[in-house]
Length: 300
Image (cartoon, rainbow, N blue to C red; front, side, top):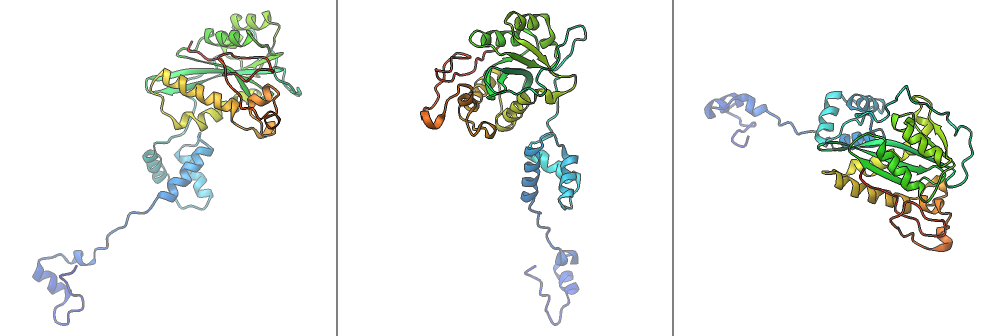
């Protein structure tokens, strides 16, 4: 304190404090400078982006493995301040019906070398402030092209059937793969595929990796888009997800496709040779001589 003179030759600090009516603890107080936790917040965020299923305990363990002396309470506090938490299954989208017939998995060791050879489908959920909506999509396994998609506020078979019927109007896969959820083992779905002469393939029970291509798309969609946006309404979600899928199909380069976009691989176009930017239409599929479409989408 400026009023005290620690070097005073006649008055000790004790006497100076007594004359001024101050506690000696005031003299020796050293303010605590808040620790800058920016680096830790960045480390936590990077871990969570890479492994979004990690909660604060596993993130703490990962930090300790990286030689950071940290406790879980501090990690939890920072995660709460950042508004992030582990992503884990909430609504169950794969509900089996043991009375429904299932089909064998046909993709094991299959060489997939052309568009429309294998399509795959799955259902995931999108969180809204008022609850959840369900997203179903069809992916062409060879090109990673999203052929069609739908949003629904109920987890029924009809919105899956409507999506498939729209896609079948202009293209047919040789094999259609799905999980063993009740939507895909229902008589309505099975009949639809059999009427069109499509071979039915289903994942083994509990083997999510059998449908890895659509699972990877869900991961891309949620990491690159859904986690970065807050959808207030179903219409907001529909418009935003639709824009992302269009960008994914026509602009996102895939290393496994030789750095082509899914649309270029699906429609067998050479982007360097043609130097054409794909346009979109309102159809779910058009012949390969036409421009790539915007995937069929609608609210069920």
